[in-house]
Image (tube, rainbow over the protein chains, first blue to last red):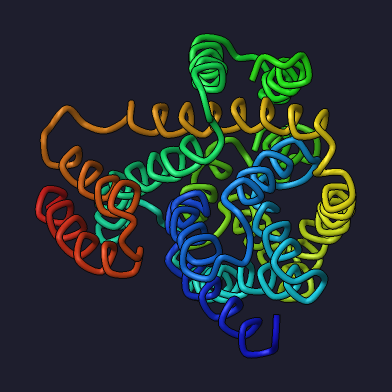
Length: 175
Length: 153
């Protein structure tokens, strides 16, 4: 990967990060579109693996963004995507804290949150849709996903147990 | 999220429960990782810019190195059949958690067709048709916020 590619990766992720209202899972479909479909820097499977590994690793779940950067271009890629992730969020948050708009129930804030929430949900489900199709190749995988959803919705089990269960099922050749 | 609340509210008593929810709500309104924004805001409030940067370093420092380590192991062993099987099961479970996340978020939507329409359009455009996010968001967001603005007044 040359420097202009690296710059393009950085700028695209920077733009996405600035749009990630409601959490970074809302921009994951576009990250996938950019690095897998448009540029073919990594495969859909590598993308999904990076996501799963970051969920299992200690630390914030968003570290999958760093791992994707690492897979695309090593150290420089990891630094590029991580900086792109934190710069917009830092700038907006500090500006916001500085303006000390402390009341989250102000009418404009409320309208923003209420208006954007349904879109954030649609985008979160889009992320799930994109991943489910690159991860599951037969009914075993879909069954495992469905089981995870059923258990996670009905119990308050720590998600790490579900990830561990999925990994074991995979090792046993069931996924 | 669970741990952030535990440390900030219960152990250190830097925030009350109510302040925690409000700060998190503000973090959710701003772009980027919610919990990261919360940390930044806390750091800034208590110790100004140096506090904000300390929070950022604490948040990203170790996790950054840990995932790079995982990335190195992955690059080395991803071709082993056993590793592929394990990752495949792990991914199926991880995506299940993501679906759960979306379902739980959706369960707080009001029982009215309008928010669901925006959810459906966002899903169709970005998830199914794979259109670029910036276009979909640029068209949907103004309408969604305007509709919500009308209803809150």
